[in-house]
Length: 73
Image (cartoon, rainbow, N blue to C red):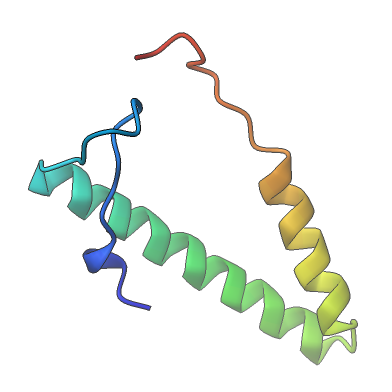
């Protein structure tokens, strides 16, 4: 997955983020998250935990994320 090639939209959904530093930070963050999740996934498999259950739990975590800046525009 090429995280540097993602086109990020602004909050309004009508325009894109053009700032290369913001794009770089997002790519770095996603790379780090992906690495941590891959490590946790592999650990679970080595501990004989059902891989599908691990993925379901990852999805639950994602679904609980909230925007602390709701009023940010």
